[in-house]
Length: 417
Ligand code: CTP
Image (cartoon, rainbow, N blue to C red; front, side, top):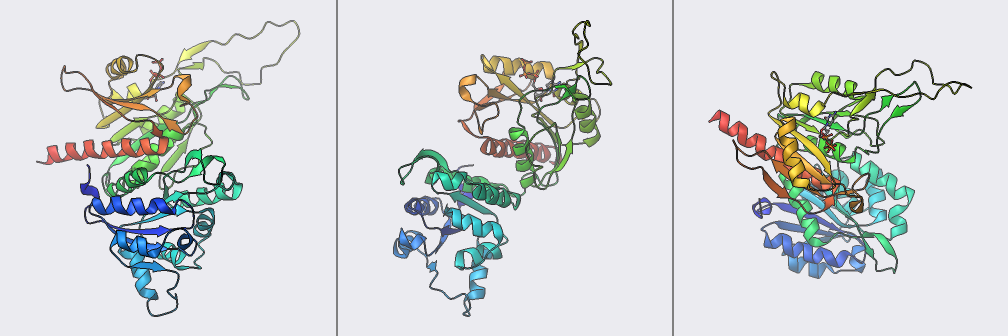
């Protein structure tokens, strides 16, 4: 994909007030190198850290500051400014700016543009760690995410204020990658139907007890959201999780593996199925109708288990309505690639996303993931393996959605020519 993505693209860069504002200069330079046009808006706070002169010199364009009165005749021009961009980037996005964005306040040029724009918005937060962790900021971020704003960072590290923790603005190279990802989003899955499973399953023992696992549903939900952002119509079949239903996705909540399978089959046909759920391999063969009680003199209960249906294998081996692309996950702690390749074969799926879940990686329930994409080779050839650097589950979801778009797009092109 490389640099072509940015060629001729127009980025509106809002520079907020924070020590990280200096990184915006580097970001402009890199965007310009890749052929993007950059227009800068410098907030009053931003102006305390970098000058309009430097932004202007690097962007080779006029810099818009708060000196412009919102009521003069240029106002409409400013609104047009935000509409003319392909993407609006806020870097650094301070706690205060995020709060105003989240509440739809338009009390300066930057927030007015953000409220007036109909273009995607990417934020690169930067703030003190306590501000980042404050309930108000959490709430504002959740609000912005639900509004469709994408975020990159912040990173964990030592901060200018002397504290350590999350709050440092993402590096320009990472912001650049996020900009590219956001700009490639449009259309690549338009008209496609995607089915995604996520979360654990809960298998009842009696009306109050169950067998479950610690899957958070983060990765599966992020994949559903990323496919939806690329224009797919997505059905997410999720076991019990604390993740909110992703925006623009039809979410069906289930408890057990059998319910999950039924919901998946009901959601067919689909172009792609991604099985990210941690399905319980067994269920209790005869769950009790009443709560099991401890009664004196009675033997302790013994649970008899039976195998649950394998949803991934069932979908991959369907004769009718088999999705064109069936993707499974493999959680491995060793011999990752060999196990993943064997799984491709045994399940009959097309791709396996192999997760390294060794305890040292902190993948389970964590924010980050380290994966290898293993694709079945043609005929008897060996699987193709792509190893991705450790990244946030959101970034990995974007990359998976992108690969799905590429593969389905190629298939469609091949069958229609
Ligand atoms: N899967 C499924 N239904 C099941 C079990 C697993 O759909 N009943 C899917 C999961 O969603 C995942 C893949 O199969 O995509 C995982 O395969 P699995 O055989 O369960 O392997 P691991 O969990 O990696 O572990 P192991 O190989 O040790 O069994």
